[in-house]
Amino acid sequence: MDMKAKIFLLLGASAALMMLACNKDNGSTASGEQQGQVVPEPEPQPEPDPEPDSADDAEPASYPASERGVGRTVNGNQTGDISGTPYKYEFWKESENGTMTYYNNGTFECSFTNASDFLVRVGYRYGSPAGPGVDHKTKNYVLDYKEEKSGRASFSYIGAYGWTADPQMEFFIVEDWFGSSPVVSGGTKKGEITVNGATYDIYTVWRSNAASVTGTSSFMQVYSIRKSSRQQGRIHISAHFKKWEELGIGPVNPVEVSFLGEAGGNATGSFECTYLDFKENFPN
Image 1 (cartoon, rainbow, N blue to C red):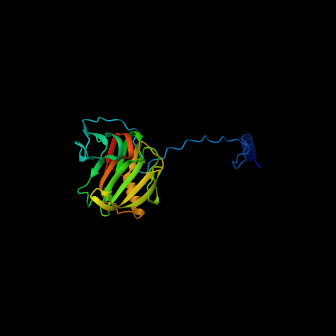
Image 2 (tube, helix red, strand yellow; image 1 turned 180 degrees about the horizontal axis):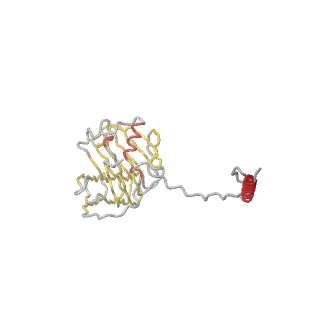
Image 3 (cartoon, rainbow, N blue to C red; image 1 turned 90 degrees about the vertical axis):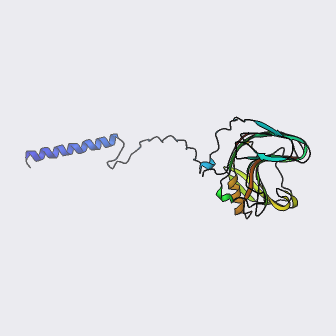
């Protein structure tokens, strides 16, 4: 073997020894597998808040009081238009003392004393109460509200309300109440609906020859009653319409969709809607 070959051999052996020494110092084998090295686990990162399924799921961040404008007070049973809005109002009582004041932005307030049945409501109406109404699938009803109340009542409903045609139905989406949760006397539970994490019990009850939006008639009442009450929030009205039809209640062709405060059974107190943003074509 000549001298150049010997030098080349010695250099190669030295390089191999140096590589083995480096691997030993790093706690690794020649294959790169780590031996005995402690690798700290990465710190857990907070999960981002889930995005709403659609714009329909994102409730307002706040419910600010807006400029009410001119207030108009009524104390007799009547309906009418609220100037500057697409809304209509209704004030109704049997015979007791009570008043309602409504404002240009759709908000309203009322008081009542020893009322057997007393109600106020603001919202949309479509043509004749007898129908044909509108196909709810051509709309998307969303109602943002804030309200305050005080007093007592044997029965009460605060929330979305209205009537449908063909078939005629009276419906309630109950968000709040005076005293204990409403009980649907003689009603049949049809199911439940969960909207934005809140669950509502769904009931129906048949009324024969009873007072209705068209006079005296026989009709179905439909109730979606929230399991826990609240005084502000977003009501996904169209989601309830869809669920009712899935349960065989309907079809739903509303002639009225409104925000309601009703109290009765020797009721005395007050109710005020301080924020109202009601849309019939909310974007999906």
